Amino acid sequence: MTERITPAATVVPLRDGAGGLEVLMLRRNPRGAFGGMWVFPGGQVDEQDLPEVPAAGDEMSAARQAAVREAFEEAAVRLDPSDLVVLSFWLPPREAPRRFATWFFLAPVRSDVQVVVDRGEIHEHRWMSPAAAMDLRQSGDIDLAPPTFTTLWWLSRHGGVDSALQAAASRAPERFETRVVPSGDGRPAAMVWAGDAAYEDGDLDRPGWRRRLLVVAGAWEVQMSEDPEGPPCAGR
Image 1: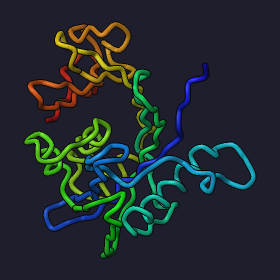
Image 2: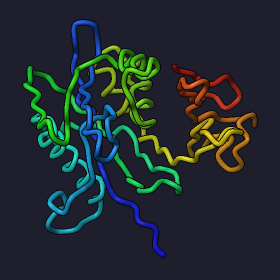
Image 3: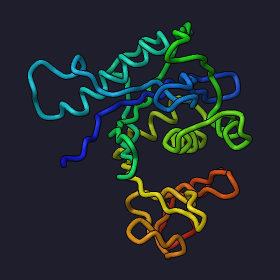
Image 4: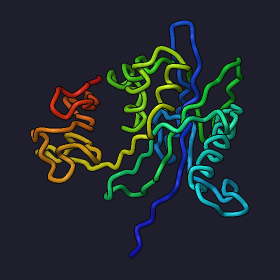
């Protein structure tokens, strides 16, 4: 049986707020996919996003078009596809009920926009700083998916839109292929990504690279090594 993986795209609208970098987040309908979670605009790549004449690079082009379309459909935010900067690629673990292969993009919002949600698929929206969104997740006030939390963690290290865009454009997109490492009671103890020292055998104590999200007493902590011999760069 062929494993089904669905192409998808997510875009993170960014603006410079009074206190620094802010991101647009949307709260999804409790009954749908990612029910009740706060997310960035996004969804699966549709046929309308595909170019009429297939060519090399179509996957990225289609994802870019899907990201722009979803931002308008979900929040009435118009984005220019040429402004999008690719940030990362995410693939859920094999045991996930449905696997979305998702490209994440950053997009600047340079002028005031009126965000409009349909109250159907999307129930609410907020502009907030990455750190504030992470704090709300840690306190249990909002629910986030691990890719959203990890993206917020990366963005929290940047003070403004230009800093984030330049950092993303200056390197190859990071790829996150996920494996869940359960704790003794069956609950996830960590989500590790390809390249982490524990990715192959689940040994979280093995020395080496850290590319993981730890779950400790309900709190999340991102660990990303910049030096395989040094300590991981951790975030709440």
